[in-house]
Amino acid sequence: MNLNSPDTISAAAAAASAVAAGAALITAHRAHKTAKTVARIESDRWLHELTPTFETALRRIPDNGSLVTLHLTLTGPVALKYLEGVSLTVRNDNVNQRLVISRNTPLSEVEAQVWGPLRFVPSSTEADVDGRTIPTHAMTVGDSLRLAMTKTTPPSWIAGGEEQWELMHGQAPLRLWADCRSEKHGVWRVPVQADIPPSQPAA
Image (cartoon, rainbow, N blue to C red; front, side, top):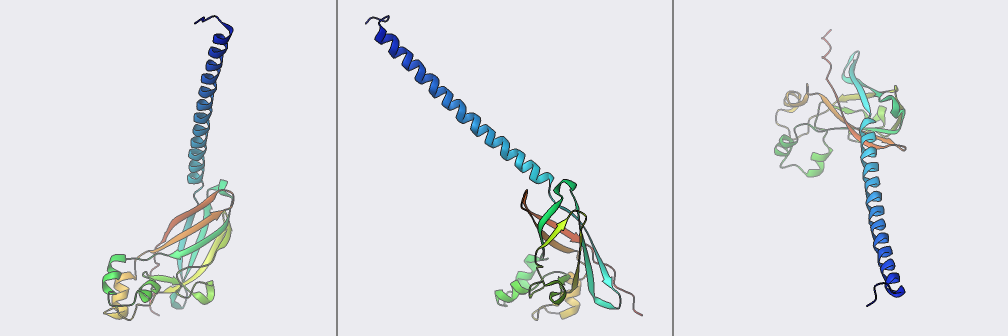
């Protein structure tokens, strides 16, 4: 075999070209994969940095001991600027306990019960029938919502009635989920909490 023949040289050149093309393809694939990984990491970092922050306060309505107003302010971050949607859901307290005390009750009734100190007032906040969730509101950083809330009522199967319910939930903090949506940046589920204000002294 003549290694210097034109055919041999052409074959070697073709093989080298194929190897080079394969190496270039592998390099390009790795570069693309790396770029996607970096982009995903950067997107996740940016989403984390733009997580909405809220300030909350509960204030009692004068001369109405069962009603309070939830003041919810979108405080930042400034770069977020605007949310197309913010909806609030009252979170349940004492999940394990509620399953024990309601074991003989239909599941539908258990799920309908708001297990916490307060629920939204449907007539004034357009909340769902259980007072658990309010519809979506658009908010700009710095905006505030004022939402009427009322004491939750104990379910019929609670032994001890109102007094026992008050011991279980009356002074527990109000815990909410704030589900936030930005068409530009993404979605978040942010835990929000507010302390129950002291009861008004009797007149």
